[in-house]
Image (tube, rainbow, N blue to C red):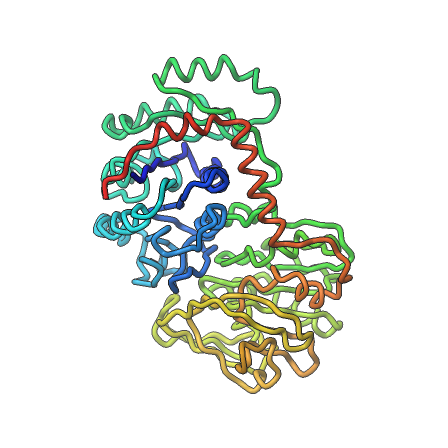
Length: 485
């Protein structure tokens, strides 16, 4: 008796992911079994799953909200933008190919059977599956072969709620216009609209709500007021990087804004730490001289981002920062950049070749086609603090610098630290979520009151209460349809 409902948007960043996350927690709090599902996602912010693959970070957060372990069935197709090769195509958690946009759009319909199989797999032991669309539902130029929005909804025969963002303006036109331009058979699946990100007095929208219901012949749900605490949750995509800089603490961290930055939610616990100021350095700007720590983040195209880093003169800034006594940490692709060279003999990230690294660690990296995906429990070697992280990389890094490891995974060394202790590299994503390690690494007081993981849980519970207050969830669930598995 599993039921499902799909949430699509009039555009990107209208709040689909948060609505699904909040509903997942609300239904879980009611004692229901609920699972998130996104047929196709495009993001370089990914998470390792319980079954040894990767999915979009937003679906991992939604799984957490549902109190479920993340599995690859929750996001069967993940597109991870790379360099000149287009995107890496992840199917059921594993890299299948790297294709140009034109190649992918021509062939994507062939993935529909695998998408439907993943959906059925989730539906077999769940009360509700909450499905999230991708981008805008009105991109009629991309409708043929679609597997992300109405293509999937039609194939699975799932009703749709269409979400609009009132804060950006034009929400009435965007909702009415979407229904006007899409195929009539697609529009027939839309059961309601939902107004999201409302500021001010909801009574002021009553006439707008009445207009929408009269014009679209469908109920209008909400409006759902803006939920400010959502800023504490991991962001889905790089749109969040425009406002990532935060804090006024004494410890200053600088991070270069690389074009293909990946897994940037590694930075979230740092920007939440009271004693930290985190600055995302935009292209064209120099690294701040007063920074205590520079973090080179993960990258989906390490050699291309390293070239970009040099083009901005950041390599010179990093070297000067080190000479002046500053610290540098490279995570995953950033770790690879710190070495002597990065070789890509098979052209995994672009044209085959070798790029000189920054030369700050005595290491060499060779990119390889097999991606390493696993969750690790580790111990930070210098402090002895426990941490949990995950590997998500395509390369092997070796060299004398590994004689001083950054961490230990069981008996195995992980990462590297320079002889002077000020240049560090690790493949472990997600390491700063561990409160004890984070404070020891930053030299912050142990009495600091930030409990990062508990804070995420509190925000999810707050989001669920927010939706319970401002949405008639029982009415929303009545729109769901029984799944045909």
